[in-house]
Length: 384
Ligand code: KG4
Ligand code: ZN
Image 1: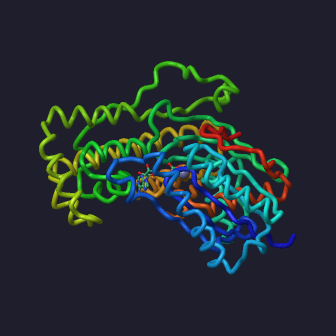
Image 2: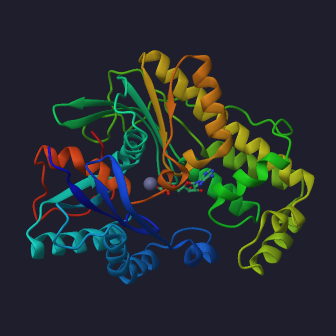
């Protein structure tokens, strides 16, 4: 089989990304233009601004990915692009550009589910390390700003299939990190900031009640949602812990100190850990550490319960929150105790990137599973 060089394009949220990957096994180039600084003053992604910024960035980002890979528009073998899920306007920028390239260059066009991309980030890097033998069944936890999903992943002919056995009923785990950081005046995005601050606090200082899921998910219908009704389910819920943090802030009268911190940090262009620490008292650090511990423990206990119930051989943990230090450390520890190998992407491939899109496209390239020119963005694209 000759090598295939696939150009991947990703624009589903606040990163404009392009990459060239060889045969799903080697990152040749990986360019990510982040819009974080632009969305920071709003404490979250503003969809209109995101689309406009993607339009500005897409041409130079793709060009840079090709130059860094020593490739040209005409030398790549296929063009892969994220179809969804994500922000419709943002997705359309990548899709329109990819379609135009594929049409003009007469190259195959491959549409990729963003969540499948996160899963293939793990496979890509395992292959890059020389590990070509992943043991099945595989359970993948995809945990990011927009998603918290558990998928059983299987290989079928040349392609992959996925069964959803758990998802969040409300907020995604990364969303909880972002909302709590915003609430505490720590800035955006919250995950990386909380990750750095948590080791400075006492994770046992504040007790959060475990997330409770009482009723059946009313969306649990095949077709209307992505769940498999006959399989044991392991759902998540993170809006309760966010409300618990808010209540803690109110009960302990923390509003004034939060406002002071928000203003102080807003005046520093790129606050360092020292800047954050100078503006956080022990109570805040303890709250942050306890919040992170609660999320990490919940993600790990549910994922390991799902792994046991489905008797899986390998666990993948991927998506932006997979960059979290405590999550990685604890998953590795607990996985080792259960004899379950746990694979993560490197940190740059945990958060959104296009190498994962080009990697997920490779099995589709082999299976000639190409997209028609009239496909469109799917904001709530289901992974199956
Ligand atoms: O995968 P991603 O880049 O975009 C989505 O598909 O959502 O994930 C972004 C999310 C944000 O919520 C961000 O706060 C979170 O991942 N995140 C982290 C860390 N780095 C990014 N959460 C916890 N710890 C981190 N180190
Ligand atoms: Zn993502």
